Length: 277
Ligand SMILES: Nc1ncnc2c1ncn2[C@@H]1O[C@H](COP(=O)(O)OP(=O)(O)OP(=O)(O)O)[C@@H](O)[C@H]1O
Ligand SMILES: [Mg+2]
Image (tube, rainbow, N blue to C red):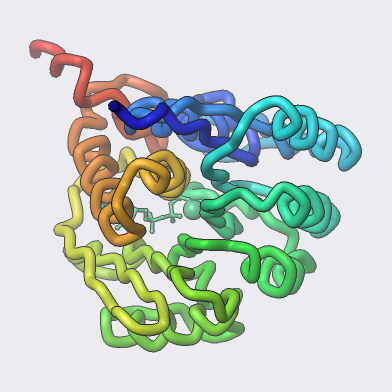
């Protein structure tokens, strides 16, 4: 018998351009074969050019969205994206501590591709001390890892190894907790990511694709991972499939004509034929 289609929740902000945030997450979750649900933590006025405004959602309403959903729907995996402010982190932590989803992918979103700040500086400690211990996988980029560890961001693969080891100490001591350290910010042509669970250090190598269309790569990766975790045999397999999916989505981003800044990736590359020139 075929496995049931998993229900996956994205808790994140809204990017109206659809390249990042909840809208992008739902596309990625759908594309990898799961049913996407979304709880909104903040609205943004955003395009491929940057983030022009942020409109936070009331804490009580964030809590209500999460509780109403979990009371009705069995959620197999959760992905956390933009939370924005310290009280939002504590609200979401409180809800997830009660609902205890089996898979919890935490993308500690701090800065958008455009350079705009998406998490208040004062909220870093709450992210580190309250949210990360709940996660089954965390997916920081290199600058975020540096901020969480209060050190300079890694600049090469060797430094990434040390960073992944230190990040693992911020997670629960339990088995099967993984650091997925993204190498998208490495200088040069290499985009290798690292997976580390305190025992196995696994390199996920990739050559950098030369494109400006990297808006939402991090959101797309963590959402695809949340969608795949309930379907895969283990976290390593899910992580490899998520990266492969994202890589093809970046490679086919040129099919789209969305804005003139950092454009989105092509979430539905497997279904949509490449447009004819
Ligand atoms: N140009 C590229 N070519 C291939 N892979 C890339 C490229 N840029 C990023 N990636 C991959 O995309 C994933 C996201 O990495 P990145 O470091 O860009 O995350 P991020 O900074 O959180 O993204 P975002 O700005 O969307 O939040 C990683 O797996 C990384 O290796
Ligand atoms: Mg990111």
